[in-house]
Image (cartoon, rainbow, N blue to C red; front, side, top):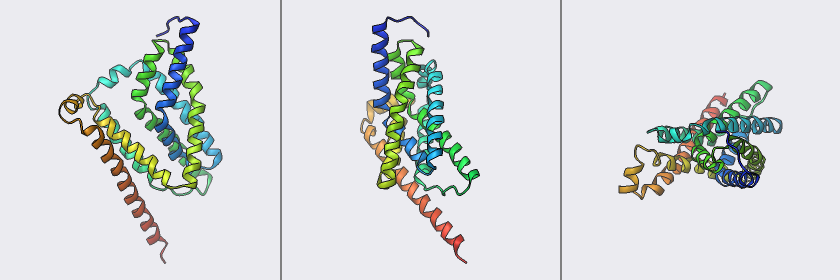
Length: 234
């Protein structure tokens, strides 16, 4: 894993890793923004920092196993199902944390959501970055660390848009559903059959999953608000 490289090769590889990470991490920024939008500004910063640290550490760790992991049947199907649930959960409005204990619980939940969702969504990203690193683990680490601030800046911008224009919350949740739909048909257990016999699923599956996240999320949110209204009645 630790191989020597000339300065020029190292610079080129680092640039490739950073570009790949920035280009492929748009959906990761959406997850961070959705997960943190209900936190206080102080807790948003903490969730940004610790969520990103967790993602970088796990992405570097998984690099050595990514080719093997992506060859496992049903792994991406399981990841797709997990993403669907995360997208639905993020769409349902969370209660505002009224005290320190609630805010700490919400902060911990946001960090967990960021790490889990970003890792599931980044399986293919890690493979691309590992290829660019050409076996140089330190390049992957440096490239990830350098691009994290860019992703965090994008997440902060998305959060402001979500606060001002709530429609972006639905767009973000739909994007998570879309990625989930793409993952399920990339699983080794069905990818060959889909490519040979049902190529149309490459756009039908993401579209269906995006709609499913929105429909399920809004339904659960409606039921939650209705329950809260019933409890509030004298």
